[in-house]
Length: 288
Image (cartoon, rainbow, N blue to C red; front, side, top):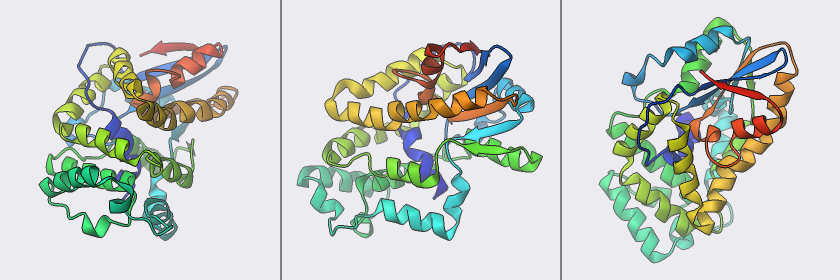
């Protein structure tokens, strides 16, 4: 279940070409204060390890690790309760009622190709259903391995490094599992188009991520704003969260400790990305 929490961010990292650049690790400084920010892929095939050496270098210099949220909480009874609370309709609606007949049929057809019966999922929101289908597709393709975030979370636990989190699990669940609200048909249609090419396109985004190709990732991110619904999804998933994180990052930069902040790669590219917001506040950014 913890992979479902972060899966939607991975689902958005699609349709990317590759250009050689640097790496997806940046140093942020102002005066004597500094921290590192690394872009991540939340679901990464095992053969992508070891990671580029810049990740290990930043980790070795960091006093504290900072993640989007603590996905370990989803392994607890409370976490599972929160997941169900946000994943299911509580007002008597169902998936087949919320979606148009055409869209529901398209979703049903795709689910069938993955060997998934939609009937047991009829009380769940489209957001959760699509995360489930994406997870199944990635598992079948052998691409649902441990992500960069979980890799470093485990390492921090082993090394007894302090950890901070930019969002609570409930905050992230409330966001990820309610993006489609009032735009369910558009959300499902857009994501079904991406899921049909998931394996090949995720391979491309991984290549762009490894080389720190923010131009390619920015083009991807902005492609979501072509429609009014897409702009809403983009703002909810990326822009608003980036702005919410900025004060926390500035507080970290005001302390003598060095942090390594690990967030999904699309948070570091495109409109109102985290690096841009920090530059606007006078911080120096250096790509490693």
